[in-house]
Length: 153
Image (cartoon, rainbow, N blue to C red; front, side, top):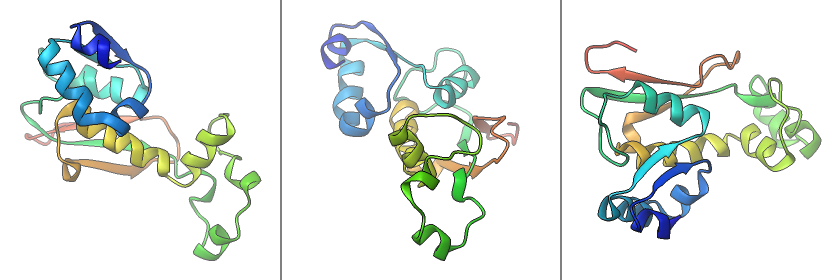
């Protein structure tokens, strides 16, 4: 990924790990190499499509107040702290809306995955973490939103 960014290639980023693990390094390679970075993951791709034309990865888009990433809340959304403390791995992988692999299911159930997506969004869209919010949306219909300075979504 770094070599492609440094060579000015178009990168279709389909994983969050590249940015979570080496965000500053990768974004610098994108900038200096003149690369184009396009997010493929549903939440980030939806945001990218809503941004003003010409917005480049890593540059704060003009007119944007904040980004909102949604999550269903997972299998423990309505559980008490005691129930969560006693939860089993089997309960964690029983996602109410999606069928996924075990690791991503546990990461989603604990909201760890959403935290990683927040980090990814900050690097992709050049925003401070304070400008990226996570909202529980149990129906999982909307994956992300862009709020503009005029209040529109």
